[in-house]
Length: 233
Image 1 (cartoon, rainbow, N blue to C red):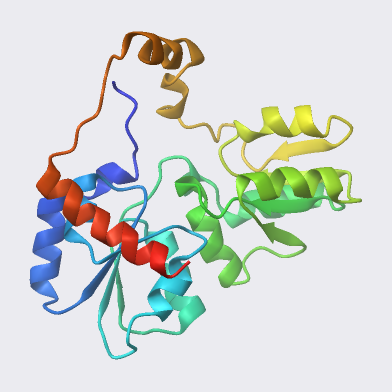
Image 2 (image 1 turned 120 degrees about the horizontal axis):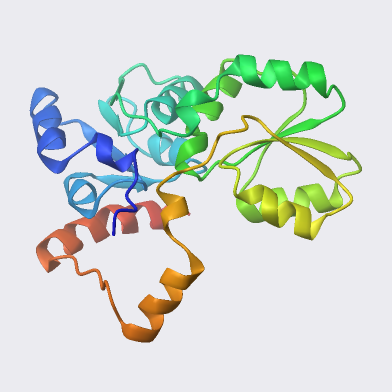
């Protein structure tokens, strides 16, 4: 029950209502790593991989509030060229600590390795910003979890620098054991995610414990933001 999300915790519904009041008429685009209450206050939901598409669907003359991830918002602003995007100062506790100098150091140590970045995990959105600003030199691939797994299996390259939560390395080593994987940062582990174990999942399934219920007024409004995103897919 203590397995929260440091990114989601950076913004509450009350804070978002205040931000909206400061920018009347602005369109709110909320990242998936937010609470249902925050999504209920948003106009659109988004992921790292579709945030640009969502923003580009909004009329160019509208102010846009992108939240809660600062790095995702900065990336979207650069990728779309929209100057009327305002950023919420939130971040993931894992990826905020991974900087371009970490990647540059890893590239010096492993010059033949490719860099892989997960676009949909909350802790990788800062890297999207760095890539857009050309702060990370060399070959870089942005892909979903399955896309990353497929890439390491199919790529002729043998070595990979993996810039995401390090839990993915376990599966990569299972799927393509003949390849070599270097975490972009050795301690890039989400302490919240690690609180969720297989034993706890099994207990929840067997005993029906810890059911999550969202009040319908909140769920209905949050669902609207999600459905607007899905209609663009």
